[in-house]
Image (tube, rainbow, N blue to C red; front, side, top):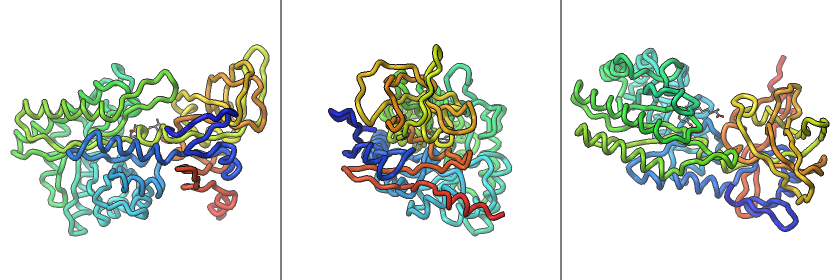
Length: 427
Ligand code: LLP
């Protein structure tokens, strides 16, 4: 987060509030989110692409009603991928026409709700779904704006993708063997659908621009084929999300304006060569907007020194508030934030309180050797895919998300309570 600073006493502040006060008021663990940073990043995406493009924030990274309001105020649109995300977006006042609805297995009820609400686009992910959405729209007396999601066949082993562009997977319709062209043919025949464009999402936590460029190139190729076959020029392309962020100092992320420049240049160039009108571009960043804006604040509990091995530092959360280390071998850093220390660094592993040895938050980190129970430590860059993937494993209560801004803090998602847990248990 941008407004993080360390005072002379070693105590870290964010948005003008120190972490000791935050821990007292909201408890630990807690996700502390810097609202000014979130808004600045959202704005940077919007201005990078200018008025010729649309930015859809990917709600799966982290969604709450406050986030929806911020996005609305900063002029971003929203990508949702479930009925729950759609309900959150609508209940916080996101205009339906600025919502894109995704998913490889949308239920009939979800499609019905999205069409009735008037979402700006539904991204079609399979042949059966083309027919399903068309029928539902028609039965509601509507013509639904849709995009078709294609897999462009980028070779996963040549780039470090959390790959979704190769063909052997559950998302999208392959460009290969004319499958996407066939999907376009079918969509164009159905009265319930207005085909507005082609969608591609190549993966997540990507640093190498070349994958986006290949995708843009291939999507424009399909637009050209469509023009040649049907005599129409689709007005939009969506190139998905996926821009990587820095989790540790080894990562060197690209900025929104760099990706905007690369994408608009390649799309412009290729369209000119194909004598196509340049389509309106949209993108769907999630992680790159919210990821860096939050850190998780934990209190240190048991410190176990295993002679000759390492020190295990247990915190009051774990894999239930951050599954990414266990699931993806993700790397994080960690720092002591409630005081300064002159003690020598010790090799530590930050672990949670769950009944599972894979419950690791930070695999390898150096923390001061005098670390003690009651110290507060922070794990940065947990704004994306941590609260949104949180669980109740071991009936551990999910932490709050606390937004700080200009010296004020408020929970935008409150801490779960034991009562919440018991309310669901109706047996
Ligand atoms: N658009 C589509 C169609 C997507 O499937 C995704 C992410 C995004 C946009 C946003 O991607 P981003 O800009 O956040 O990389 N749970 C994983 C990440 C899964 C991403 C799924 N789709 C993680 O924690 O790394």
